[in-house]
Image 1 (spheres, rainbow, N blue to C red):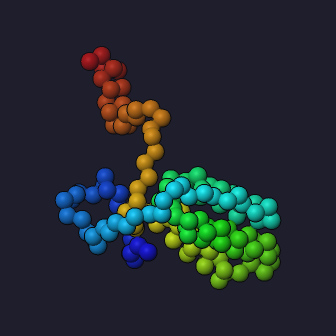
Image 2: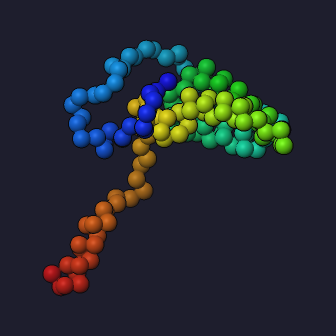
Image 3: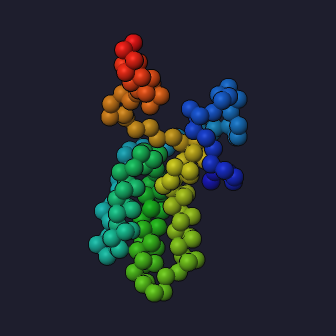
Length: 143
């Protein structure tokens, strides 16, 4: 999934918007209905439990299918087992869990590589710092 190399810029940061780089997008229908998220297992490590719950509430989860939720459960189980191992922490299992987390688009870089951008609603209209500084100078000068 995705490409190798540096994380691509956000679409708003690109200079040329008329010539997309990379493969053409292919659309396919998804399964009907809303994907349900089973409750996390009581036996999971608290970190694995928190990750699983945060994933279900994250913006990218709107793109998930049933197979993605099943993968997330499996990753949380593997994460939990590795965290519970204590001194026998497996670097190889950690690498596999980290790779699976990337496949589920859990980081900004992973989402950008597949051209998924999540936008937050701004709490209030923000004024750029440069504009605020100029307005302060004008006020100080009495202009």
